[in-house]
Length: 151
Image (cartoon, rainbow, N blue to C red; front, top):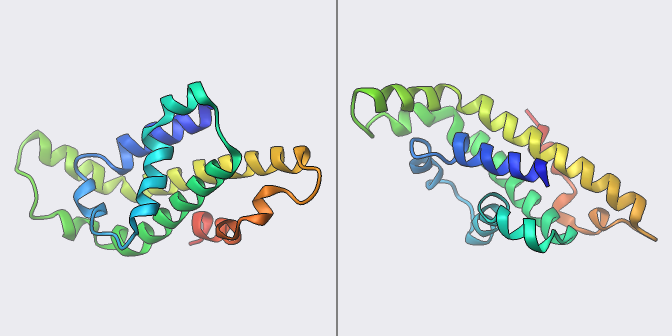
């Protein structure tokens, strides 16, 4: 639970903050993927009381991995250019520049946290499954390492 909370906090503060969000909205990601990311990062309190369903959590991780992959290649290389005309000077400009300068590092940290969650869940899944673990039955997880850890 704590790792999911850390992922959620990191995403809201460092990935989808008010300075970066306008660029993220330009990603070519479908609504279902955005909904899964929102469930993982915005609805943490709901899961705290209701608990997690392993298949849902796996799908949310897979959606976040697609987001990381797309962001890494579509947004990160041109982030400064995409956001150069937005905002004003003063303190907001300094905060925006800090968000832009640290974005690649923050995206990598987000990916590392997601991968850590995936590995922990897969270990639990492996131990508790009576047959084939659930993570091996979900096609979206086949290249999770490549999407999250890939260069």
